[in-house]
Image 1 (cartoon, rainbow, N blue to C red):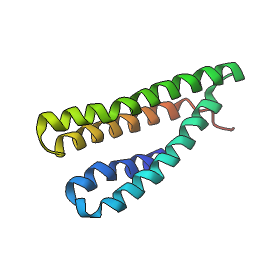
Image 2 (image 1 turned 90 degrees about the vertical axis):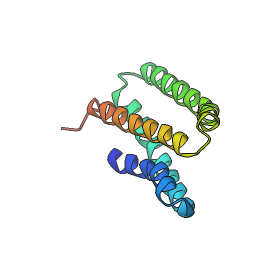
Image 3 (image 1 turned 60 degrees about the vertical axis):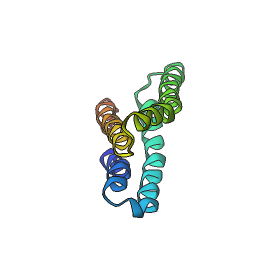
Length: 116
């Protein structure tokens, strides 16, 4: 499941580089991936936390980090665009972020308790 989500996310920057006129398709795929990503993230938190208190702490940490990245994203991408003068460089940054997120998801899913 997380690989399908990662592929949905990857289509956004790759699609915008290769076929920018189909931007609506790439945005829809990334939007679906974002919804799936939320479900996976909170499933991992719920299944790996040993108690409600641990789940609250993990959820707070995940959300704090995620929203901090989300808040910094537009400024970072704007600075990269201003420095490069094109949209290709910011899309490479987005692709790197998406691939990092995919690796992190795979690592996090390794620790999820599976029913016997």
